[in-house]
Image (cartoon, one colour):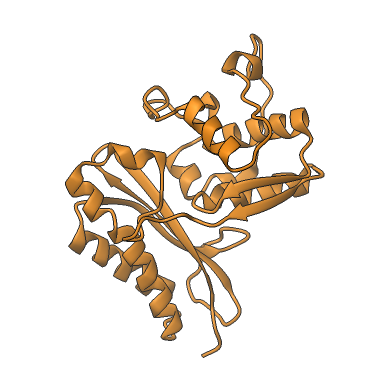
Length: 230
């Protein structure tokens, strides 16, 4: 666990963690070893250096969680330095994290390839997340609305809708109609820069992402869409 990516009042202390289970799953999948340094080893007394990821880390999740991506980039830079990997795999559910780390690797000349692992979903489309265990039974059923809203966005783009605001409004309406979730944000942005779109054009690679709260539980999800020719 990396405390620097959790802000004040976030769930660092109660965040689900089970190193023994994680190691068992890793070894069952073919891993030979696990590198799991302690917080004290990663952040010794007097530690004060950090990686500033710039404006790309200040929107979306960065706006809702100030300092989050500085913490992410700092610990990942340290891990890259310590382990010298040729390849690093990160889950696509944290799409902005992928964008931030790719930018860091490029800007700081890390000799490592970033690979995006696909989102793993439940049968109803809910993206797997450690935080799903916080959901009540009713909230768990309602949370499937996130995936349905993303599928709606894909459908609307495929039908020729190019007004980003309209897509966002329809996603918002679906979530509010089918769940008690409180929408933090819905974004239709450039896949690589995270700049928000007003109007989509053919050939755009867009990232549709959202964050929704169910009580004290905050869930994120996203999908990538290539805008087709009309």
